[in-house]
Image (cartoon, rainbow, N blue to C red):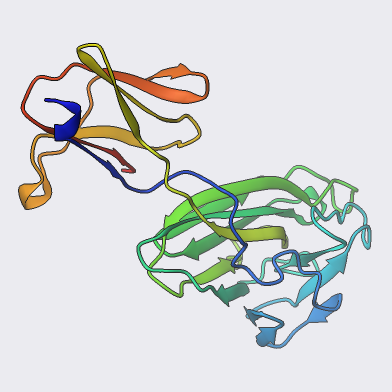
Length: 251
């Protein structure tokens, strides 16, 4: 197996700096206040089944912090489990990988739960109660980030269960969805061996190898774990056959 007989395939990559697909992800463009009717709220759409939603300003209430700009969003304004939801259609491309990031928490540290979905992502969020009735505990204390594969023009939805699954309102800020770049596999000869490298920040990926690509390929997890050297995952390959294929794969 020589260098000329090896193919490198890259699937599902790691993060990079791309434009945020979420409009008004920091809730700065919508006037602060209560909203108690379902429908558009700037680029967002709200569905109200319980208490009102709202845009609140930094320090408007005790502990009502924000993480980006001067405003944040509360999916259950008034401190009650609501059953409300917040959504936005994104210009995603089918088959591409994106990273969803956002900051969240509960009013007065009273605890909250939520559900977020976009593309093939369906994730439950739970924050146990920690604060007193109206203390000054920061509302937004969590930062979450998830990878998802797009179906195309996906709808990003945050929803807050109604009681008894929830406690108090769900506060959100700094919501972003960015395209994820593909990590680069590099293969160079080193004496009788071949050295395969890729960035260590390409997390959640497995190196796999195959001897053929027919019928989907006979892909197997590569048996040797990579070594970290100068910001790169490094694997030494000893050729054992006439040809080979390598890829990074996200399970």
